[in-house]
Image (cartoon, rainbow, N blue to C red; front, side):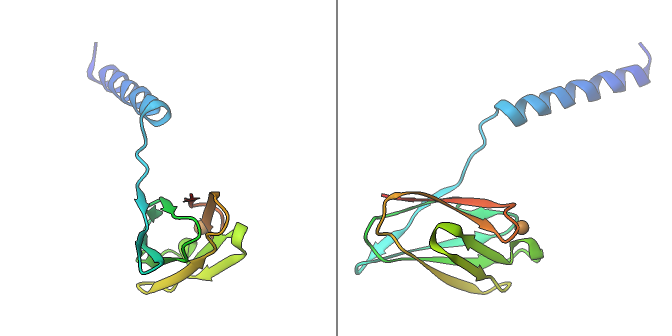
Length: 125
Ligand SMILES: [Cu+2]
């Protein structure tokens, strides 16, 4: 077998391995629980190529603040939208922006960037 065939074979195997990993591998989702103090709860969410944490758990009935901080310069992430709560908040770069969320109803909610490309999940329980 000559070198060029070998290269094609190795590249092909690498591609197959990547596809298997992509579809069947465990994609770790970062999650965080808001810290409750004095009848309030809040959590910091970093916006940089997505959201960290991407899954946030809040306690039902405790007023909640999500502090979004966008360090990503791309305009894609410059708004955060909670369609269930009627929130469409601008996120200026490198500033922490507090978003208050109604925690009266338990359930799973999602948030997204302004173009609905990046997503995060909120669990209220
Ligand atoms: Cu976007």
